[in-house]
Image 1 (tube, rainbow, N blue to C red):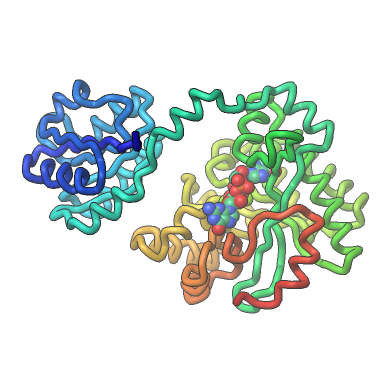
Image 2 (spheres, helix red, strand yellow):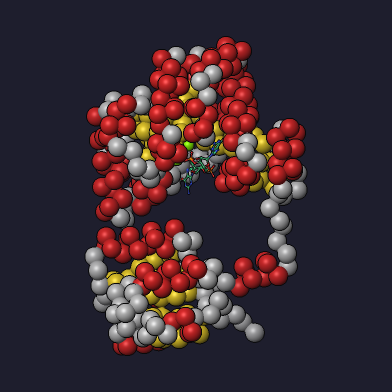
Amino acid sequence: MAYRKRLLVLDDERDIAEFVRDVAIESGYDALASNSSAAFPSVYSSDIDVVVLDLMMPGTDGIEIIRFLAECGSNTSVILISGYNAGVLHSAQELASEHGLHVIGSLTKPIRYEELEQLLATVPALLPMRRLSDTGRLEKPGIDEFIAAIDNGEIVPYFQPQLDIASQTLIGVEALVRWEHPYRGLLPAGLILELAHEADLLVELSTCVLNQSLTQCRKWLEEGLKTLVSINMSADIFKDLGLPTMLEEQLQMHRLDPGQITLEVTESALMQELVKSLDTLTRLRMKGIALSIDDFGTGYSSLVQLHRIPFSEMKIDRSFVVNALTDEEALAIVKITIMLGHELGMKVIAEGIENRQTWDLLATLGCDAAQGYFIAKPMPGDALSAWAQSHRTLH
Ligand code: C2E
Ligand code: MG
Ligand code: MG
């Protein structure tokens, strides 16, 4: 029998709950409406694919329901409804995502039929997930396997191009770690970082990616390709007072200028240990190595801190760039970041540019450089020269 997705709608206004239920049934769902938030825990079951939730209800409100879903480890999708302004909806959406819930959209009252119908069409079924666990998904690799992989050279950097927006030319690449696993395929950065964290090997991971990136940079130069390379560093590494000298030696060994590398560190990680890192960061800059503040906008740096650290570059977090065309608040953050970066004398780069419209928007806003799938996805080091040759301008 065909799998029918299941929907549960909770809204204290009975006619709205029933309206959502009816649209869902017309869209092929098994749907249930409830107008009592107190009864929600007894109506909800873990096989429900999507919960449509009113935020503003008397008694138990929508935020409490989100907490309930998170506490029972639910992996349902969520659609939020609210009479509030966009700001409140946005905050609730963030909160739900932080609790690990998959928010697929939000609706403001009065709800429009087409809008709801479209959202319902995008709800992923829980079924494939259940099937996956039934048939036994491949387990996460163990720490021993990970340590062996570092030694075997399976942990490698891929490189994603960065373009100067005005000239559309290649100015640099960002090294992004990947695991070329012999039978699991190409494993992503998130998993590798998780394992490195568990094994207390974050610093070793940074060093491993750094060494390979410098070797690759030298190779490119020999192929006639001059490009800067940015390397992501875990914040802990900056507490090591020996880092500037170690880097200088590495650069000399590979016959590279300090100006050819940029070290990226995420805003949120760095600010926690700022005092211990300031010495190293300042000396790195004095030696001519560029420093980039990554995922800007997601941490809590104050203007004073930004002024104290000698950053040369600011990277606007992907979440703002991706939403800048459709979300006014994301657009405001992008605009302010560009202004702030420029006022502090930094180069501003936008990551996560996925289409021509976003590229055009960032160009209009005066952003300096861009990185994203619209330009190219991360690729192995030996593919970059060919890419650079075939890339002239963006079509
Ligand atoms: P990041 O440094 O902010 O890197 C950008 C991430 O966005 C990369 O994910 C990249 O593949 C992805 N990306 C680039 N363009 C687009 C786009 O247009 N659309 C979308 N949806 N995504 C895009 P990735 O490679 O999975 O890396 C995730 C994070 O892991 C990185 O974020 C970085 O913080 C960390 N990381 C990656 N490599 C290393 C490493 O060697 N050492 C350390 N310490 N962290 C690393
Ligand atoms: Mg980065
Ligand atoms: Mg980033």
